[in-house]
Image (cartoon, rainbow, N blue to C red; front, side, top):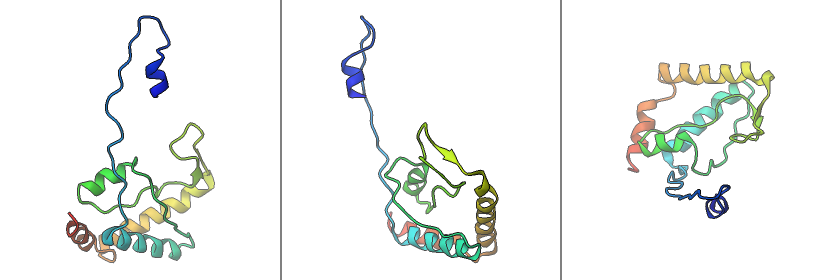
Length: 126
């Protein structure tokens, strides 16, 4: 980006860059850990192993976390090269991932996953 700004593609064009990445990565605090474990256990019931890796700070979940809401990113379909022009999805994963999301929501609705407790854990760190 800096190179593009320094060497505009047309004569007479002047570029100015301002702003930047301002979303900090969400840490794996007590609320995030508790939610992740609940999701991992739910995945295990469906024979879907769930793994965690840091998102790096550019996902919408970081905004939710900053607002005090524990959350899990990327529960969508399986695939690869996320957030790139090479991103792809494996259609065979659609049903499994929909089942996972549905079961998580059912567990939250029934209180088996205690959303109020997760929120309270998050509020302790604000």
